[in-house]
Length: 408
Image 1 (cartoon, rainbow, N blue to C red):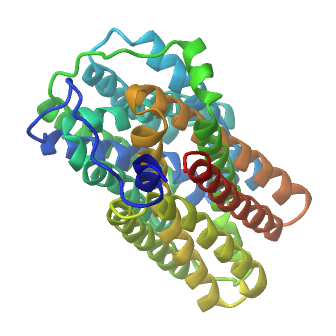
Image 2: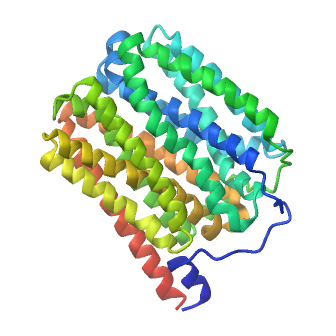
Image 3: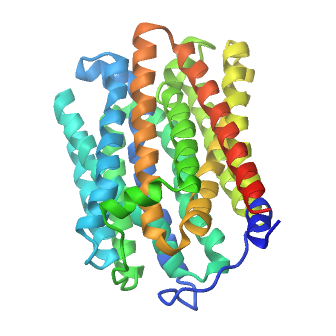
């Protein structure tokens, strides 16, 4: 087996530094990107934590309210390649600032939304910001630190999302219960404004680098390694978001938990996600394949546990915590795979493809989840999640095995 195969199956090898990389890590800028991921993830999933009161206030069903996440995801999937291509001649920090400003406006509009259509408009604006930010964040991490520090930098950036998963659901549910769901979006807008100030103060000039056009993006997407990675993202992402959107409704109706206990369970899931992120950052130094393949297995196991013993409060809490840990590891493994292994010479293109795939997965998961909740029952979304995540693990295993055999 060649060194390349050994690197993929085992440790992540150090790769040659790029001319546009810094020899001294810009940790302040990395932290500012982490704050950006915190705000984006918190805002993206706020509807899940306040789904019941939001649906009641806007006069729609929970399934219809859940589709607001679909609108965000579709907008982000379109925005990722579009923004990357039309802004390819602009300083990347200007794009980040613009995306943060758009996110602020989105949350303000959501706060004052008087109908589902207005709320959907706000969420579409958030989706555009999401696509623009995520499509370049991974490539920017590679420009802010040397290659050997990239896993650590990506972990810090993605930790922002993990902390948001810890804070947003329980705090969102609790604040929404006390002050109403609109207060959550007001707080999110304030956090976004603070983040924008930090990014203006810390981000260095980031001139545009070569960015593949739409035709080349389609060409990259056809590569076996890329196709496998994107399929895994679609399966894991749709499996996660089909059920995550309705996790509060599940906990309210199956184990019949009160709002305080639900907040604690969601907090435990967030804590699990935080440690999953850290574990993945450590693991990619030793076995990237394991970091990419194991989390979907754990997610599928957690989904099966909810189906079988979900009526037990303690069993549900444990399963949700394990789910949070596993999903917290997913972005680190997938991003490292795409940026350092799949097409390292086109890191920004890899980021665009991954972002689009994630957002399509969110949209598919939310649509399927809504259909299943409205036409079958809540438990059915976890059946789909189990199937999808187990298939993702199998896809990754077969892809890694095929690659090792091919270059042995």
